[in-house]
Length: 199
Ligand code: GLN
Image (cartoon, rainbow, N blue to C red; front, side, top):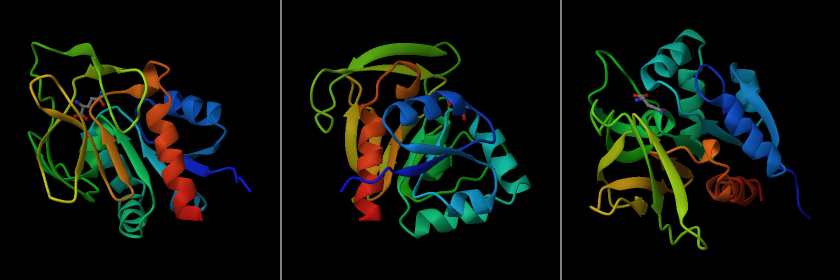
């Protein structure tokens, strides 16, 4: 029996609509999440790209910080892109004063790691975990995974070895934005993690 995965996209700020579209295309039932009771009704969560310091502040203002942290601790599958990856990191460098993350991923992530000279760029990445053709990856003021703990799987690196996609247990993070290029394989992997968890 195949069940329709029920997933949410944290909808406080960022490219929520793009994630909703990809997940809907893949057959998921998708809810925009702004309240704890909405989070309680889904089996997986996407943290969108946008501005991590703003999402951090809004999550506290909306009373969502603790519920998201509890969901992560509880093993809920969560996929973060760009700002979402920053929000999943246990440690960040170059955050703004007082910036917090939800945490869960045993990584150190540097915000805006490519500097102000390189605001955005695109590359094709071979990602063995996804198989098939390379992923066309769009980086926009993107973070880098500078350090990762033993339990963290490195899914993708740039040519120079710098890490831009990771997985640890039920958490998945990418420095880039598959949701803006029509790339569906990361979201499909996330939905597999959600189905696995529900079963
Ligand atoms: N630089 C942003 C941040 O710090 C992330 C950019 C993005 O999500 N495209 O949150």
